[in-house]
Length: 201
Image 1 (tube, rainbow, N blue to C red):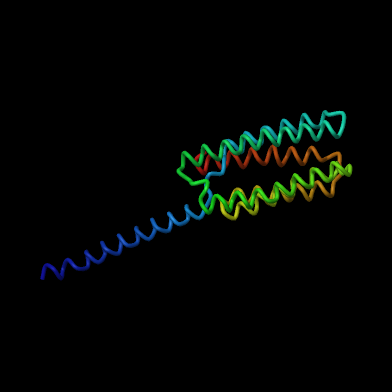
Image 2 (image 1 turned 90 degrees about the horizontal axis):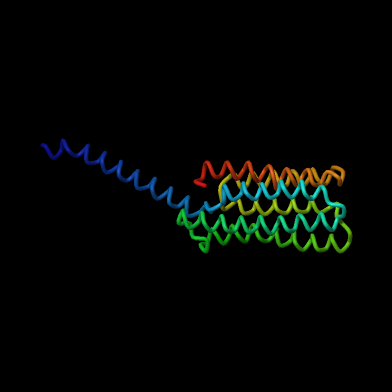
């Protein structure tokens, strides 16, 4: 009789244990399907570089010097970004060479390579005015595509960059540094700080 009375409790305990196990499995699968090593503080530092570049580039006396400022800023920001991703991945135990990390990297890298090629083509043909829109649109496209394998903030960053790129297309060329400063500076800083707060640095 005591065994029969204990059965409902045993069943309830088993059901609770099974539900907890399923929740653990679900969380583990979500983490393995999401690239979480997106740099927060590193992204904010990249934004600071972008904002400084916008201010400095606006003071240049020629288009060539303007381009040099932005290219140097891109190299510095890329170095900060890669170092930050590596450090965060090591701290969180997120494998950079895993399937999700590779998909994120490829989705982000392809538009950036296209942006580099288009920058060279625009430079050869004197298309200076188009460069801000091209950079913003392609960086946004890369972040939006990579964000499919990452946190939602990365997708929001990508969509915002693309909106700024469209704005750069429909406004006077003299506003180019404004849109670049907003995107690579302010938006990067805000999103980076938010990621640092919500996703552990």
